[in-house]
Amino acid sequence: MMDFWSLFVEYSFGGFYITILMLAFIFLIILMSGGVSIYTAIWFDAIFLFNMCLGNGTWLIVLPVSVIIIFMLMNGIRAFREAYYRGGQ
Image (tube, rainbow, N blue to C red; front, side, top):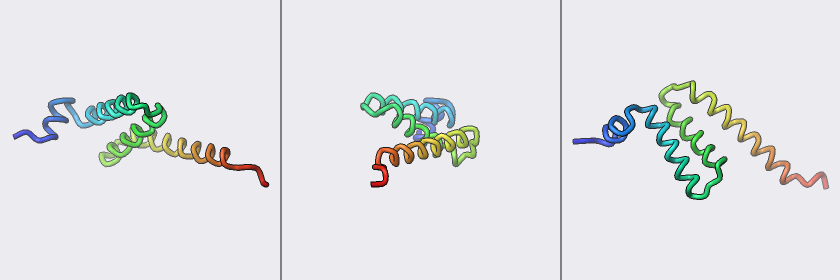
């Protein structure tokens, strides 16, 4: 009897980390073909990679992705404040 791990990870892609990268690529293609902006698609992929690699302790991926997530969050907050602020009136 074949389970999903054997079918999807071992037979299709060959390993856990290759499967994670291929899933992120598939999600990116699906989101871009669905009309989602490239920034939103990359944001989704970065959070997906962060969550999948966090449990396995892959700091080579978790650390840069977490820095990018915090940087993009700060830029989003700054852009929101600049768009909303009317100027002391």
